Length: 235
Image 1: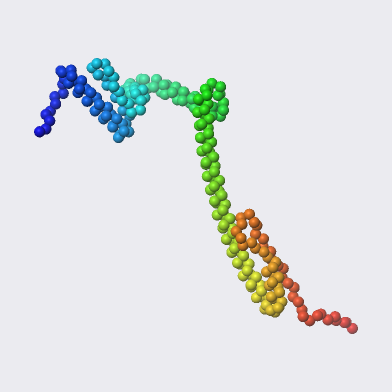
Image 2: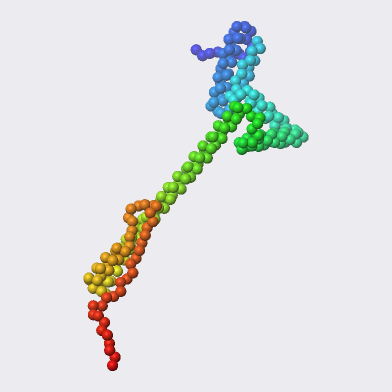
């Protein structure tokens, strides 16, 4: 059997009224808490009982909720009354000036100036903030240096690959030079010239970024004539 419709009116019995107040109050506080969590809303709730007791709930703090309420109410009032717009902007300018002054003082303290009026706890907090900032700067610096080292290693690897390709081309050139010498000077002299040309250039095959690569080319050998020159006597 369903529940009957409850008539909303003052409960005459004081005991029943107190029990109902306790149950409804707890339910209202629970709903306010759920609303603030589920909907990310700033909620402030104040309840005064018939006996003068106060019950409140605030998602952030009751002071901030009340200040926000008064500020929004004042803004709405200024929209309704354009004549007070100048006063509103004057208050905004004063608030911004106060914030700017605070930021300037905080910046000077971070730079190590105007520290005479600070207590031990304030100095300790300032030191902790500076250490955290310095730690973040060092981490960013290390990251940049690490990236640069990786990039240099990649460039060194590419240079090494290019050096290997040049070494291969140099070998091919030496082989072609040997073949040409065989055709021109004969097999024995070409082999001697080939050995001489191979011993006159050096290349380091090991991958070392700090060791320079030295390449030397031998000069071409002058032709050797088997038949000695005879002196010509002129009559």
